[in-house]
Figure: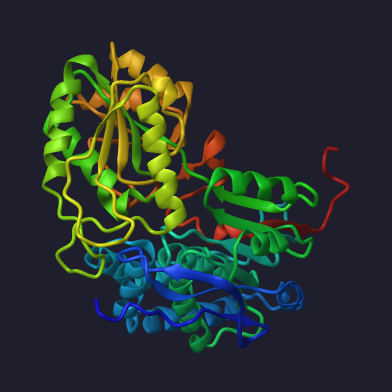
Length: 485
């Protein structure tokens, strides 16, 4: 923990590493101490233009036969092997930029090679050309990469989300321009370095750094054909408006205030364990975490007691300490946002429960927080931290109505003893995924496709479908006068 410096971020444009433009008097800070870890950087408009020109020149569907797919899959597998050699480096970097305890960050980093190899496997399983039944005529279905892809990733998944989104686009054949969050750029740079060393062809992958202005230059450009963005709703709406000008393909994962319905027959310990796990996992900084807890009125007090008991025992500390269970909030702006949301709930009359002991460090530390005693209608903002609000409801149907009154659209949770009834209620919640009696991150099952409903975004994700998002269908074949119309 004595050396918390990180290398200065650099760009990878037109197949060369190059220095970024330094923002004067601005630093990325260690969330544990508030001390600088590297200078804040951005990318000049001229360098963004170079990246866009290079991506456009690099796009081609010609030659994407089985041999080309196998060659790209082999490169991806070499990248996975290189990532395996950088696990500890990635974990330390993630912990220093997201605030997630290093023990948890290491587990995520250890999963990265598997996620990267799964894209190679999916690439091998996708036929680039498939003959269709057409009465003996030559009719073919091609899977075609959409074109240059902009991949914009957030600070809360600094290595996993850049790796997952980038490898999917690369496997599809899209030239990728990756822009990680300005608050956590360093882990993405390690991932890009591994892909470069693995031998990607020229123009396949570029890396630029900067804030929303850089992202807007890329996503609004006509040469970009598909945008994959994970982040906040305001930025997502801006991207969608800009994309409408030339009808780009969009995959927007924007999050929401995910409801947790605690039914009248719920096991308090099961519900409290899962909600506590959900609100502290990744320091609560994950878009699918629980936010608005809708508990049957007879269970509110025992649930509050169980949650505050668990919170009081959590070990909050430096994110590089192996024994830390909960680290600091990732960055100063989000720390301020969380505190303002807590104060807004207090202003509405909520009682604020913060029983955890904070470490004697000058970082962005926050006790896991439970706000109780206000109507569910005032709890609409995404919390995105170790914070939930608990609301009393008269019945299970009232819980369902409250959940759907301001739907998250992304994730939801149902806790109940009667599993058939719990799943039945879950099927009526307006969310792409509903977990019963748990709050894990991993996909529920092999076929658990999840759409982003309503304000949570556009598109979705599913096991085995990540590469296909970056491909379009093209049908080419011999017409016939014998067709009916």
